[in-house]
Length: 82
Image (cartoon, rainbow, N blue to C red):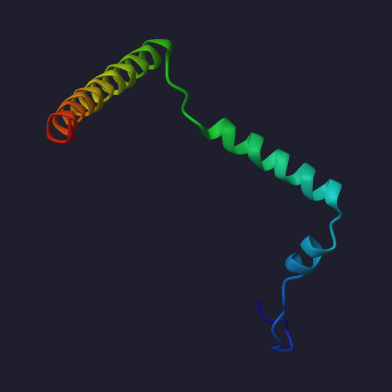
């Protein structure tokens, strides 16, 4: 922004931010966190149950694959090295 005499006016916001003490910065942080949490779209109970079920099924499936491969490789190593 320019003043009437043509000079550029600088914002004092960074200087004001630097002068805040620990407690005011912490309070500002908490207020900003609460403001952001209000913007979150929380899932409904039905969606939450569906998402949880999908995740659990996928994790069990992947654990089964890893366990199966572990079993196969263990048998192969024991067959080769006896």
